[in-house]
Length: 153
Image (cartoon, rainbow, N blue to C red; front, side, top):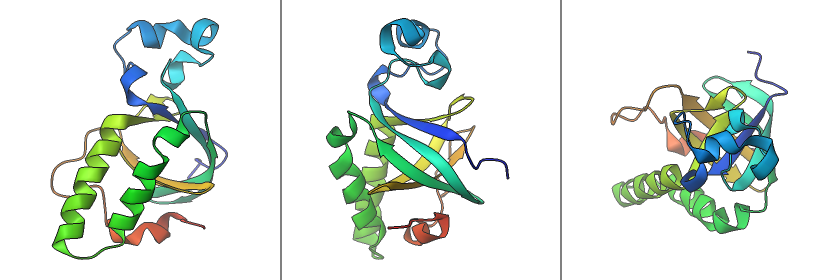
């Protein structure tokens, strides 16, 4: 599909200015060390080098950035809850996923995406994304089927 070889970025949400032209977005390389097209001054959580595209999932090698330690437990909790199949797990998974969406931003080579479902385990990450927000009817997919996106190990 043409995604292989691309680098996607995971940045802290608090400092990522998504299309606002604000300070974080306009700082660019000089102050933040980041290309403003990739989300500006958000905390560097990590990068994903895409090596597999299995629509709708993209997956790749995850290189943790200096801010990953602050969210590592959140991603571990999300995966543990995704593996449960009862209503209680589903509810807790949805709350954890919402926390991830508030905490981080996924940045494509073209800029921040509007919605995403991101999993990180070790040196692998897999996700699906959209240019428009997901609806409340479960567009995020079957969270119990993460392996289809190249979970790796």
